[in-house]
Length: 183
Image (cartoon, rainbow, N blue to C red; front, side):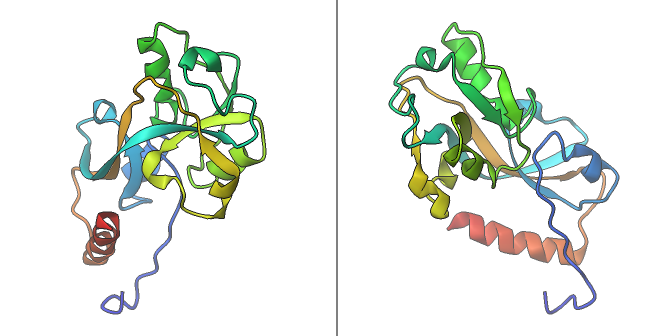
């Protein structure tokens, strides 16, 4: 950001819809968040960087690590990265499509990046975008639960207010992010 020496970048972790108020009031210029297209409202401009199927993760020695059916996971304790309307709860749709009652999260842990570490050190299950799997040392302690049902796909999305253009510095930063998402 050499062209913008007076700009200070502040990164804040969060997922949609929880980051909505900070985008709305201008605290954040934009957000990178997994989301479903049906959750988008007209106040937002969304740019999909990539699509990623969701995977259910568990610690490798979890008693349900080898489960092949969602029905096998009914009694599991779950960690969601968002409340019951956000991308952390997309597994609910898969349970409903299988004719099953969705799980009730034991914890809502609003950190998609730290969620794998929580799962690695507990008996919780969680969902993450499959593209995140294997990134970082925590993944050595985790596995993907091999359920045969189709799980939802999320879009990693750049989300911003539709009513306001980005600053030149924010545009430059977003350009770097777009390049990183391609690789």
